[in-house]
Length: 300
Image 1 (spheres, one colour):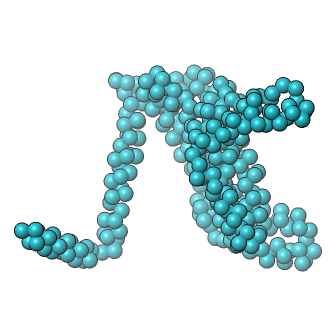
Image 2: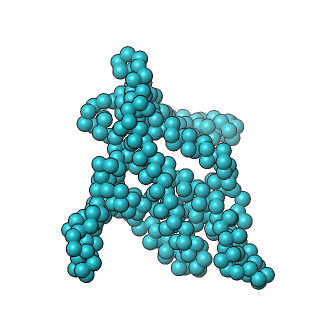
């Protein structure tokens, strides 16, 4: 009985495989993508549609939730605050990542691989643990304040936590690798002989960098900046733990509306406003810079 069942199953699988072999390449590719498409439909598209419904129907059709976002000053300040903080974090990530990426691509592959390991190390630690580590370091009786007070540089502990400074430090630390990776991918494709040729023709190293290397590295900087800025718009853990009352971001506001006030309608409206801002920024970047230039234009 078992042998007959096994044989029948084997024959069915063989017939199924033979039928797949008769399909065109495009149909086989679509069939292979079907599980992923179903997964996205169930766990991504459906929740989005559900949130969109909740933002307009509470329980009757209403635009009140969206009206509150754009008419009440407190929520407008949160939106502006989110954009401002995201821009600052993107700037500091680019400022720190650019020389690191240039160094990794300029040294030999052996040293460069070891430096890449150092960049990847933070991914082995939870974002939550990293945030609490910065709290231990920057709090009023933390390592930094104790060190400064022992040296006599300050008399009272500095306020380094639960404000804009602590938020920037913690978030930059988390998002910095996402700026480094696109820069490395771009810089590794730049022909360093162009810089040598410019210097052989009498150009100063600084001038050759500004006129040759910097413009060629712009696609990597644009891609990294777009990634970091968009990720920062919806970043939650670090702003919730290390930010102050004056640094509330829209992700923290959405969480409080849903968890504390159980206001799913307004929380859903805030979520779609955030999604619209993200798509708008992506569209502007695609219009100004071109997607081919940002996500893998021709390497020099």
